[in-house]
Amino acid sequence: MSQSNAADPVILVTGVAGFIGYHVARRLLERGDRVVGLDNVNAYYDVRLKEARLAQLSPFERFRFVKLDLADRRGMRALFADHPVRCVVHLAAQAGVRYSLVNPHAYTDSNIEGFMNILEGCRLARVEHLVYASSSSVYGGNTHMPFSVHDNVDHPVSLYAASKKANELMAHCYAHLYKIPCTGLRFFTVYGPWGRPDMALFIFTRAILEGRPIEVFNYGRMQRDFTYIDDIAEGVVRALDRPAQPDPAWSGERPDPGTSSAPYRLYNIGNHQPVDLLRFIEVLEQALGKKAEKKLLPMQPGDVPATYADIDDLTRDMGFKPTTPIEVGIPRFVQWYREFYKV
Image (cartoon, rainbow, N blue to C red):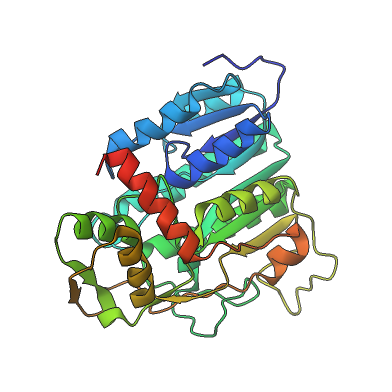
């Protein structure tokens, strides 16, 4: 890995050893951008998978990896001081709804304290654009479908969701005070090759191949807006290339949550095609050539029965919408899984 030339502006991608971070960094490197990737490579899930993703990025000459924790205030300050950071794609976070029930402090350390350090770095470096990951989980108790960025989202049902909502509020402050263009992206159930082992597709695949039963919550009566990783990465890069602008029509009399008088925007990135969980499992069974033994269980605390993204703003502003159906995405994941784990 070459060192960045001090004069060359870089895009900082946080969470670069993670699922989405790896795919976004790869896409930026393939089009010729200079990328500094940050990750603490923690043991929330198998470190070998994270290292394998990094090994895919290391041959790129314009890539530099920095192992650092977001919550390390001094280290983060030095990172921004040492590199000419032009834009930030902030994807590092403590993820997972269920884990937030047992280890809440991991979320305040990474998602609140860590995000604060990102915002301060952006302010001091006068970055041109901060794009950061929010989550469909911010819709919490909302039941009006499809979920719109123009809806109020003040009823989170997990600490993870609350931390992501807090990020949106913190970003708005910095967009307002310091005119830093900030774009928040609410991702909807991302899946695909190099995915996270704590997510349903990975868990189901492993269990079915090993002949173990799969746990199906809410007795299978779940719907998710499953979004393929390539569509997510495309959406992130398009958002990055289009810095947030103030909305001239924004009014404090009727405040729109999705825009602002500051350079601040929110977008959903979802497939806009909610899929029944049982259909998802069916497509996986076909891709694996093996039936699943299902263990039907009640709803988990902090979970929601359905997600469905309104992507009108994304389509209008980015000229793009996710289109990969699960019938295409799931077999691609299965092929990757078999090759990676030699199954």
